[in-house]
Image 1 (cartoon, rainbow, N blue to C red):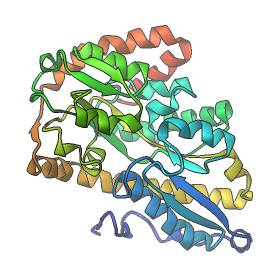
Image 2 (spheres, rainbow, N blue to C red; image 1 turned 180 degrees about the horizontal axis):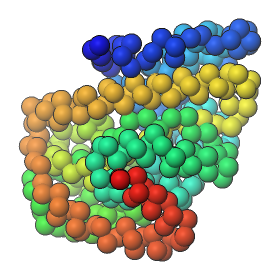
Image 3 (cartoon, rainbow, N blue to C red; image 1 turned 90 degrees about the vertical axis):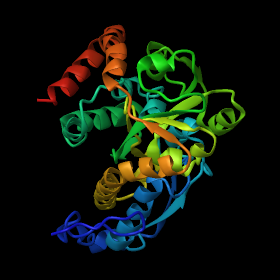
Image 4 (cartoon, rainbow, N blue to C red; image 1 turned 90 degrees about the horizontal axis):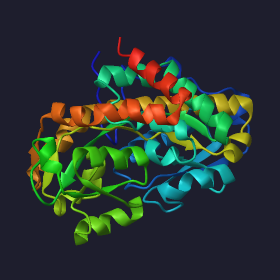
Length: 337
């Protein structure tokens, strides 16, 4: 059976089985509607929009009018930097937050931020779909009260800049690079030889346009959606960070759902995440091709030189953070086998 996937379409029966689409029990459907304001920081055409649109569809199909999903793109209800605290306070219902912006509130998440911590797509899938991701979600809930509904797709970050093509780690020396306010990411670019400048996401587009920074890194879909190719002409396929941006929900919203509603809603989120994964994996190279056709010079650097530059920091970082970080890194590395 073939599978047809598009950003506006519905994933075929080859991915979502008929059994997964069985409607929720009548006791779930009978509840009064609850509005879910679902936020993210990028345009609706981005990967978050793919996930959100699918989630709204699945919730409507399986839960009727029990939950009314309102998609709120473009940081209209919160910025990503502020969203986690807003989730804890209950002023935001649900939000996609990148792992590096979760870690200030839940430090163990930094284990996923480490550069080249994953050795390929198969390794990512084994961790995301296995015990490691489940343990992180459970510990996040216990530590912060915030629910992790779905890990969704991994967006490998590529590097773009306005100064020069990147073919080797030595080409990074001296570049002013915007990084999130995350210690791991700051140290990574220092090890690459660049000059990292921590900036909030909301400040990044202007900093790139004005030349305050020379470049940054993002998933390819974000680079396209934000039109960074209009003023940054060099794209390097580094895939140095495997970027998770899970869908998180507030304890206040989840507490308003009955146990049956929670179960159905969380399954909808997991299935929407699988849809997003399929779309993102199918489109990654197409987006890089688009960027190349729209003014960016695309290079595929010698990744070994970048890996060698940062591997020592994995063990150093874990040693500084303590036993629970070492245990989690050991579990991730063991998942390669």
